[in-house]
Length: 64
Image (cartoon, rainbow, N blue to C red):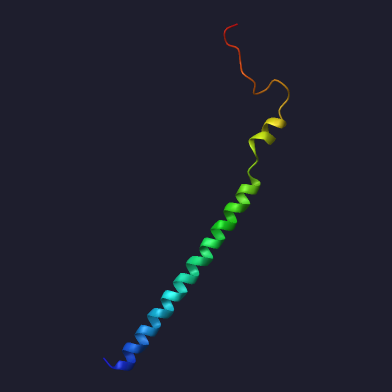
């Protein structure tokens, strides 16, 4: 194996590692963006309670 082929192999492996790191960073950004969108779409418990008619969701007296 010649020195030039070893050098080409090393350069190729470094380029592959860089591409892998970039791909991982992009994927992480996409997951973070999706998580932020899901948090925006998830209704808060206060909003869910506010849409109920009076008396719904209150404590139930089972002793009577």
